[in-house]
Length: 283
Image (cartoon, rainbow, N blue to C red; front, side, top):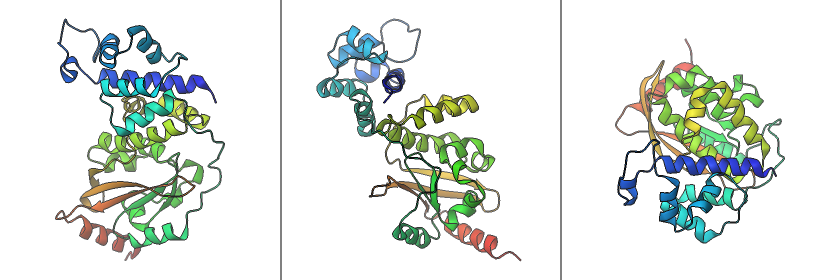
């Protein structure tokens, strides 16, 4: 495992969380005018009950000893949620799982998952692995998003497709909101598998290729199962509103099922039915 990667990720995360807070949010006086956004390091240290020097070293990504009690205090000071705390623990306590698995071969999904995909015929559904490569989808997903069969296996990474394919950029009314949910999931996996050097290389490649990826990635959002409402403007079906639910699939493959349920009283389901009928029964 490369400790430099882990410590760099820890440093970037702590900074991102500190920058999002202000003194009033944590019960501190505003004080004098600030040159940079967010709390100062000494304020976080004060709130956590640690020395400024020690916290500075932690945020700088130095190799220092940490305890769960101190991490709890820092989590409280930075107002981290449950998923963010898990991410902090994984990085600070070196809990990342090592892995040499490859995505060169397509991951096999179980017959039961295939059945679920078929049954959710009017709920676009995508199954991804821990690197967010798309390993399964249903007909509804192919009609709403794009035909993933036409994309080579090694290029079916959902994160990369969100930034590279115009179909996704033009589909979501609030594209940034749409992307942030998946970046939050991706960061959760990154914290868990930070020992896997694939993540570091992948993130660096996307930062170089897509400036907006770099901007959104450094916001440091973390969520294992975000739920959100997404509005799409489909080229053929028009306005469609879905509720996105992300579910972790139990088993050894660390798969995730993202289900887009048509929002009630929006006409989305009827539009989806017509879309599927027209696409699969052309005149």
